[in-house]
Length: 94
Image (cartoon, rainbow, N blue to C red; front, side):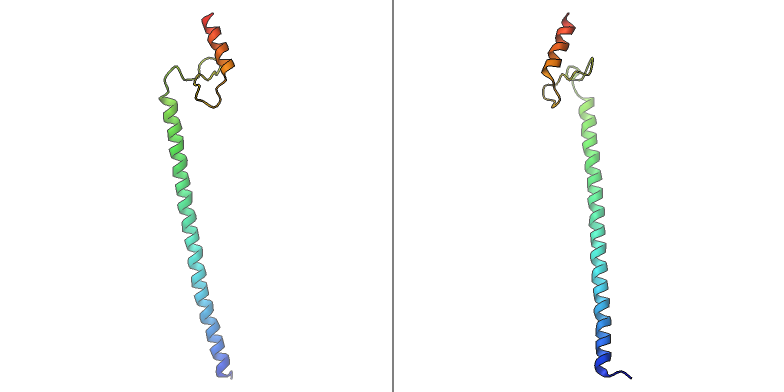
């Protein structure tokens, strides 16, 4: 038969293991919930950006939309090419 000190050590190790298991499980489930919230937020953010792009595309004035040979006529666009725009305008006037 085991001594009293060994039994106390065994029960203490068992209790510590149970408490550690509960703590670890709680931290894992919290991390999983936070990851799910982040994924949901990112998805909503992507949908909002897509909707803004569609709204902008639909509501541009006709003079700023691309016409004829994919010439960008909006000077605020980052892909605006002044030389191509001027060539297109001179070709339209002829």
